[in-house]
Length: 493
Image (cartoon, rainbow, N blue to C red; front, side, top):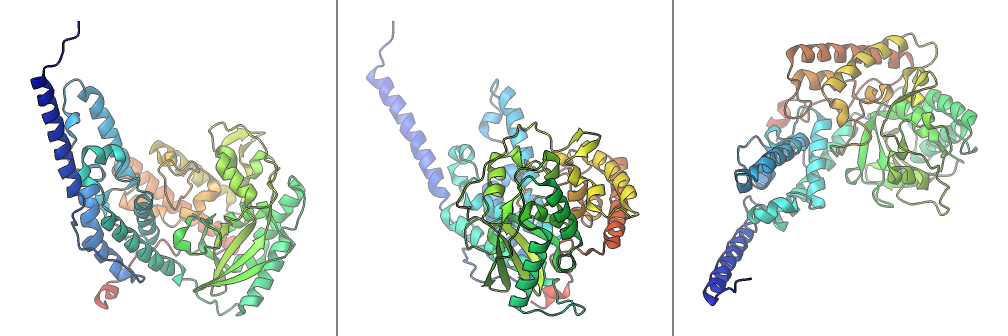
């Protein structure tokens, strides 16, 4: 028999419900309060201004609104301590906080020791503010006073945009005119780039392995491409048609030789192109056809691990090259799609980015034997060092994140899961391992393991530079240096 509620009980329930709603409403109104001076950043920040403005305008916001998960605080939600419920909630909350700190640990600030790391952190912060994914709904529903308000969100995004504009300029600052090279007009540069692409990788069948092999060799050896690319080379997909602003794109770092031979060779060119001046860079836009029917091991990683990624490579109507000071600094697959959608090769993804098949590790193009000249005397030693380093990466779970799956949602992804891709990190690995900032939060806990990894990273850098020097490739890395090179930069401002 169901007991009827008396009017007194109903009144009590309504009272406490109203009280809860009022309390929640008051907490929600609290999130509208400004906790830091509001500022709209309208011009690019100088490198020396990025960290001070972060500390003054941005850090107070994110520390208050995000610090419960992204710092080492002992603060926990109320349900963490409720008996019985805590048997589930403790492990869940602790795991969420560990993951949050792995993606963005506020206690590390902006990581200004390396330009690439600074860019990654700002890109990550801007990303979650733009898509409003942080703080997550489940979090601020219980703590509405910790929801980022619109004024705070606009301040963070505006600051990030101007900081990234400055960082992009810093990245390209090392792209100086080489006095040994002929200075070309915009039109002359386009003509030579077109000739290099069309002669090295002309139109052929989408599954023509012989044509692809020739393209890899010619693109790798082409003198114009070899001397006119920046290092590291940035590559990704354009976010919006006709938007060439690099700060708006998700661009990943590559060694120029690796990108040319293993990525650029997958596209075919007929010689046509257009030129679009873009502020301090120039965009050269080339119609392309993608080699969509090659054997699986001839793609630098399995694009079909994601149907969306495979589709984007197939559908790209053009490749966009951004050049500055007669050097190519960025390439992007266009957001504009081909009018005729190509037939997709259907593949079953097995979850592995590396596999052993037909007596060799696949994808075969990722191996150093495919990358370097047959007479390069350093290939075998470099391969030996990489294998030892890769085993160390696996032991420390580095390859859980540094793979094309990008489980940690890095905005400037770097692969450590294949020999060739790891070359892009050759100059940063020794620094990062010495500083013990990877894996995030904990670093390498075992002293002996850390010492071994540092020694291997040093040796890998040495052997990689020797192998690349033999090919007459660029060795420098403009993103391995600190955000502010010397103290005088601070004093000047």
